[in-house]
Image 1: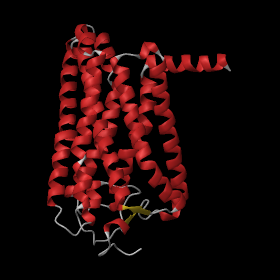
Image 2: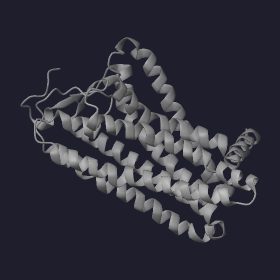
Image 3: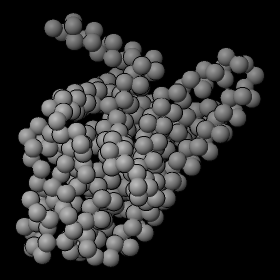
Image 4: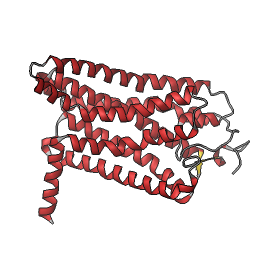
Length: 316
């Protein structure tokens, strides 16, 4: 399809694409993506089910983990229809309205994931640095309020983006470089002045992801300092060991996301394939890996899964 040029907004479309230059292996890539989505959805659903049904897991750490699992489920669901449609059925067209709605959910959920990782870092900070006040600080009401504020922050800062994009006239090439819509790419399709979107996008990045990552870093500096000052080395290592799964989740989420943001804004000559791969990693890998890491590292969660399996066998 030709580039969108002087068309009515309601009839215009963007064209999605898989992985540039890898069209000959689309079938194998689609099989891989199907496996990723199935494992992600099943893994996070299992985490939610176990935490909800096992009373011993109704603790702040696992409540925050359940919030993270809900966010990861949302990310998988937000990208799955267009990604599988593009790779399996070559369904490449997406209307402007659908594209703007998708990017709203993708970016909102990404920011909410950043918020959840920050809340989980705060949980580890209180548990290690102020254990005697852990239950009094992280009450159920406090956790609910923190989760609600995080969701509202994510929705509020992303809410203007679709309306800003809708005002633009799109007369550039309408082929996107992913199988889903992202703000930083869609705005480049416009032939209008995009400086407001660019500045606002940079503001969002610093206000949310930048601030969250900084606070997570500071929390771990204080956690490490506390662990090193514990008289017993074994106790200190045991305390740090409770943070391993969260650190894995933090690195998995922030590394590709920050790298992709830097490339989009400053790496004009970077490889399009690198940008595309980093984008898929930042969106698809956290929902896939987080349930696996937490299931492997959390003894209580493993025990909960084992108890659920035993109950299933007994009932069957």
